[in-house]
Image (tube, rainbow, N blue to C red; front, side, top):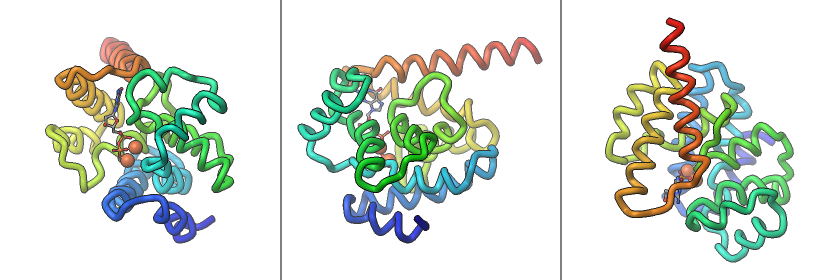
Length: 193
Ligand code: DGI
Ligand code: FE
Ligand code: FE
């Protein structure tokens, strides 16, 4: 499947606004993949499909988690999380993509996970800093992304966790675990410098 075919499929599932966001994530993913040495073709496909399930019916997605996914914990932390793991499921089931690395980059694009692969990190960060994003603090993350993938992700996680806590929303445990993991790793590499 080439870029045009993939974009044509995903466009059918998204609003114009979300499609433009997706194009931003694609360009940023390619840029980050080149900067940090991830597979550019896989980054492109994962980015194109990362929000494939953004507008799927919530009840349909809850059913997918219950019946098809191993990890049911996504049901307990707010409906916004569902589109990531369910997106990976639908992209495999409906589009026929079965590359595990691409599917995992879609699956973990919202929450992250400890021990993220390079490809997962690229898509996770691109989703946060693509040019259309206007979050408070996004420019700091964009600056960090010029030099360090992990430092940029730590800052993005700090922002997102802070954002959720200010609104008294639940924080998905693996999002916190991702933050803890990257901080621990950073301390370790600081000590060895
Ligand atoms: O799908 P996008 O809008 O492009 O971005 P996304 O996949 O990062 O989803 C953002 C939404 O997910 C936003 O409403 C905040 C929410 N979110 C991100 N991390 C967590 C979270 N929600 C909960 N409950 N817990 C999290 O850890
Ligand atoms: Fe998303
Ligand atoms: Fe997105």
